Image (cartoon, rainbow, N blue to C red):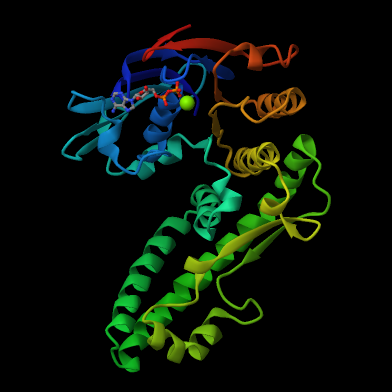
Length: 361
Ligand SMILES: Nc1ncnc2c1ncn2[C@@H]1O[C@H](COP(=O)(O)OP(=O)(O)O)[C@@H](O)[C@H]1O
Ligand SMILES: [Mg+2]
């Protein structure tokens, strides 16, 4: 659901923001340190209950204040709005409200307000460990499969228990029940991930074709074990090794997604700018699939869109984002690097100026 009204209080350097956003493109421009990234971070926090750039939530609370609060009126349709809010204080306590009622968990907000961020560290998707690629996939699994979240939680719980037993070298028979559960949840997760990749791949191809030239682009999913065998067989064959290392060596917690062009991993030959375009393609594809199959509109947050992109690339990216008919928040130091690039965009647009933690439209 698009964000109609956004109020941000004491989040980073944002003292008291009150803005009415467009349901199309929102361009946030301003000097370095004005608060542009913080504004995207606030929207991201409202959706997912975490930041994309700090693991320490207390850093998000404006210095000298005790709590931050985020509030939004989401647009259900042209006549109805849904108020949602989140507050977090220095003791770590978080309050989430949806339609005037206290909500149990951030999961409820996340499903109402799907957002994706593209920021200066997004190239980690290709350059860092498989954890980032699993996160990319699992974000989509959460929105497409109701079974995903309970299954993933069970898998994590069983994995932890099983690792504790392996670490303390408990007899093999004590492991059996846990191993069977691990196989059950691990196999289910694996199937969900495969289904998701199968559905997503055509959209990624469509988006990469629109943004950059990638001959013979391929995505290859590695389940986290020898893929010619099933999970049960792999665990049965690896128990001696697992006891030696003291933890579970194979499973969906070790899965990866290889992203290649003409058989070579993209991190080896794409420039930073090209990587950025490919990440945008992969994320926009997730939004296309979400619109198509779940009838949900993903909100795209693109921090510092112009950086590392030439005129043509910016042109293509803005056009592709606009084509999605969904809400987009873009930051840039100067608005002309966005606004002047595409003069015939058929979407509503608003430009906001961020200055020392305040926003003017
Ligand atoms: N907890 C905080 N309290 C007050 N100011 C903060 C806090 N965290 C970060 N800042 C400041 O917020 C400013 C805005 O940062 P940022 O949103 O990254 O700016 P921009 O993206 O516009 O360059 C920075 O000057 C930063 O030092
Ligand atoms: Mg910034």
